[in-house]
Image 1 (cartoon, rainbow over the protein chains, first blue to last red):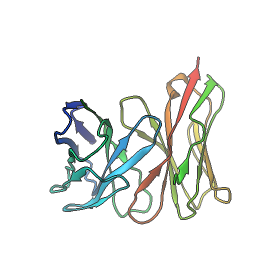
Image 2: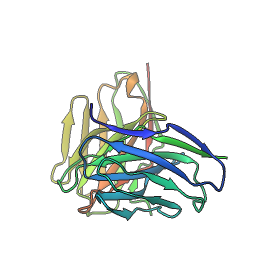
Image 3: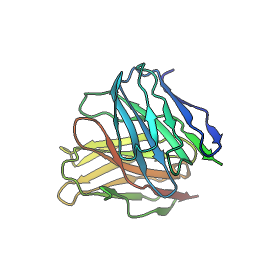
Image 4: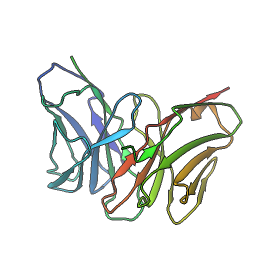
Length: 114
Length: 112
């Protein structure tokens, strides 16, 4: 049963702490993405990776970091440098290199910083 | 600068009628457009897409229309059902990286 999993679904952290959000996919997709959704706004791209051991900043990368050591995994770390970390975080994956391919999304993680 | 705009934050439609959701974009280099449906606290699910070489794509109750000269696309849902109530995002892709630019979403409420 292929798909994308994100864990945990809800996460609470104290201000000033780093936190890592998990994203795993078994769709054999090369490309993976992290988005952030805030109320009344669309999805904004944080980081993306087209291939293992390579990733690029998206539109709002400040205060975040990622790694892509395995094809299946693309964890996102929200650092204490992120000014407004409370948000809904979405991970996605897609086939890379093909002309027309949709991105498949995970269920999301709601991060609340207290 | 918002490259993909959904100017209607919400839309209410009666069950059985047509729902029309609109999306405008500014970048003429966009070559692929998608619609996603999203329920609260869940990830978006892909609904339908259209490439820039077409002006219409249909899948069951869902049809997407693309007007390149106006830089406008729309999603038609006929007939609308209560289960269609969700937030709908349009997205556009430009370039080889497959990066998507999303609109701000339209909340569709289908009244029974």
